[in-house]
Image (cartoon, rainbow, N blue to C red; front, side, top):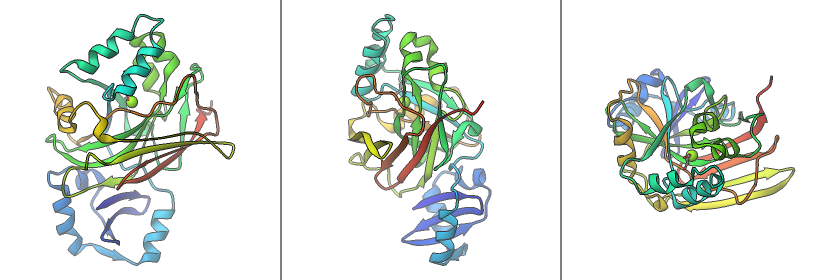
Length: 283
Ligand code: DO4
Ligand code: MG
């Protein structure tokens, strides 16, 4: 089951049929047993014709977020640990990354307020004061206010490697800025937890060429998804639920850096593809 947020309301796709659900987004998604609720609720929802559904889903989709904060986990895959140790070796910061990869407590950081999140098809930004920028394709959890993982989406944790590599204390500036996060295209709401065989892939297009292609299964992650959620909810409440990006395993080699106009496609089995174009923030 998939839930799309559009300018004309919330659309549920179930068994190739499309329904409109009129509840406000935050009230709709923040509940334990979201899959079961939607399945039951669909019996009373407005069934859309294929033409109506097409028109709604092909007009600009909104990011599937309301009042929720976006958080992120880091160094949850070996590839991320190794890439960050390499980028920060001159600053003396490398050792923090191997320590956190092995530690019981995961790295969790605040990523975005909803207004800084790019929707599918919108631009994501790179910083003007950064020389080395990458997208990070990440399975992203939607966690309800009680701490249960109710749904999944695709996240792009846009990052400055030059700022992060200069000093680990600069992490918030490397990670948190306007449009440094993208979410979408929908919430994927399965009846059972997502399969570890699920694959994440990313293609970066520049001037008609693919300049990066990568794919990985989420089974490569070092930690369990409920473990990440439960660390995040320690001594914190999220009245509307929250989003948690779960870390990247796809890191372009060497000094690859994004350029203005690059198109980033991130796909996750069962969820779809999140596409964004890279720009500088208009001044
Ligand atoms: O420690 C820096 C950030 C790590 C991260 O964002 C990731 O591993 O995805
Ligand atoms: Mg990341």
